[in-house]
Image 1 (cartoon, rainbow over the protein chains, first blue to last red):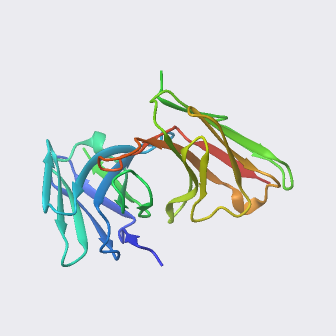
Image 2: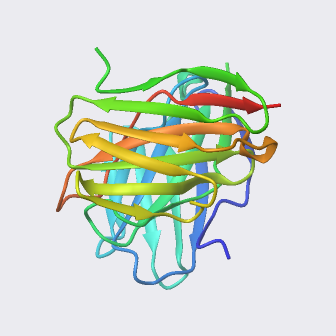
Amino acid sequence: DQQVKQNSPSLSVQEGRISILNCDYTNSMFDYFLWYKKYPAEGPTFLISISSIKDKNEDGRFTVFLNKSAKHLSLHIVPSQPGDSAVYFCAASEWGGGFKTIFGAGTRLFVKA
Amino acid sequence: DADVTQTPRNRITKTGKRIMLECSQTKGHDRMYWYRQDPGLGLRLIYYSFDVKDINKGEISDGYSVSRQAQAKFSLSLESAIPNQTALYFCATSEGTGGTGEQFFGPGTRLTVL
């Protein structure tokens, strides 16, 4: 039973346009939702997070939206750049201390120049 | 220097062999984790440790064991490797309490079991 789902294995976007990566979850007890970015031959790195009590968090070109009623979150990247090409993991944490963090399967983003 | 390091970076071994993957961190975090990544399955938790004396099984601990030798060191062992343990393994750390649960990952170890 996957508690965090990323249904799109890959996404291709033109440079300068918006990239939207989606994530669904089933456990309403999650406290935080996080996005990680992973380049080949490197470990995942934290990108942005959102508390379950918020519906939006913005950091530069990256914005995460949370819709609790739909148990859905999305990451928007505007404008997309070729350097954004990577695998993006959605994750959900039940405790703020990092315990019981569940990761989605990842979405590979291709940004075409 | 990297905050979380893993050795080796790549390893090829044979079925039945014992293998140890090592992780060291300089972030001063109490919490450490071992994950494996498989295509289409994301990152799955193998073991986690909240401090030197506290070690817990994760989602997929069968066939694995761990040792927390010090706050900075957390090693993962495969007592008798099998081919379906071929995967990318990541070590991670996080702060003890509070915050978003952000984890800091090592660069990964690619393990192939023949």
